[in-house]
Image 1 (cartoon, helix red, strand yellow):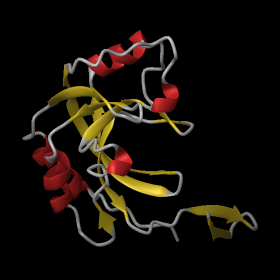
Image 2 (cartoon, rainbow, N blue to C red; image 1 turned 180 degrees about the horizontal axis):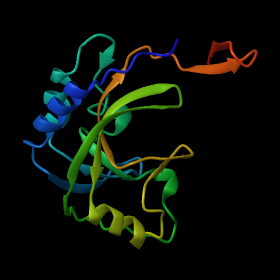
Image 3 (cartoon, one colour; image 1 turned 90 degrees about the vertical axis):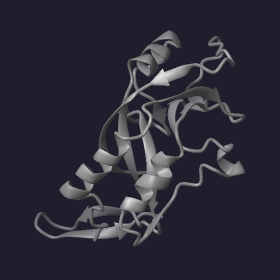
Image 4 (cartoon, rainbow, N blue to C red; image 1 turned 45 degrees about the horizontal axis):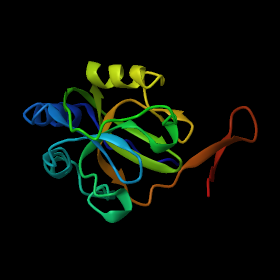
Length: 173
C-alpha cells in the first residue's frame, strides 16, 4: 500500500549527471534557528526538481521564513545537536563536497527525494564539535544531503502482521 518509488535507475542516472554539472561547493552558514548548514546553488533544487516526474511532488519550502530562508542547502549540525561549549564562527567558510547518488527516504511520515553528499570538511567539522560523523535529525542518523523534493500527501504505513502470511497496512497518523 505504500507509495511506489519515484526514482528508477535511468532517472537516478539523469539526476546525477545534471547534479555533477553544478558547483560542488558552498558557504558554511548559521541560520537564525541554530542550524549550521552549507548554502549551495539553488539550481540543485530548481533544475533537478524539473527532471522529476511532477505527479505528487513538491519543492521543499526552504526559501520561506519557516525554514529561515536557508534555500538549497546541506544540513551539517541540527540545532538540537549543538553542544553548549561549541562556538561556531560566523565567518562564512567555503566548503567543497561531492554528489554521490540520488535517494528516497521516509522520515517521520514524510518522504524525501535527495542527493547523498560526501565532504571531508563537513565530517571534520562535526569531529571538531565532538559530534558523531553524520548528522542526527529527530532521533535518526542521516547522510549529508541536499533535498530536491518531497512527495506530497505521502501517507506512511506500518505493516501489521495479522498472521504469518497476510500482512495488512495501517496508516500512521
